[in-house]
Image (cartoon, rainbow, N blue to C red; front, top):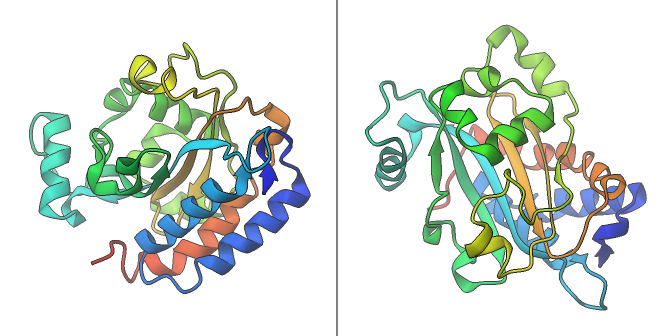
Length: 242
């Protein structure tokens, strides 16, 4: 078990190797995503021996609305208030999830985050956590909405920063303060991710029950390449599990 508050570069190297290994036999991006979040949930420890550091770990990937199944399209329609004007609209789609509550262990049970449509920069600006995640990664909202083909090579080869909220309580970037942050003792939030060859963004977000210093959070940056290595070959073949 890794101490998340003291997560080091050597921990990152060891953890990254494990992530690549456990996801190598996955049959879809969803399968790999679930293996990745389960490993992080089980192996990141808190202050007490055997204590899990994270209350919830999730894996998201942008996905074209037109390539979602009917259930996810209806979910996205409900958030947007109508179907999007074009089917190419990107939706930040939940593919992997694990946590302390039973209902957090299946993406189908998510109440508000199954598929979040991102039709414009204005809409992204109205979703504080997503807006801040994109900003802290060092991306432009416009490149997430519609990746520029001429920039794709540079985007996918870049190493992105981490998303880090040192103090989740009262943070405007972390929603559901009364329903989630306070009752489940969420202290810090750490996310890492990158851009796939398709131009789609992927992000792993960890909601932690311990304070994670910036120095420890920064060491999760290198895991993005390990996760990308795991899911990149699968995206063009199969995204969702049957």
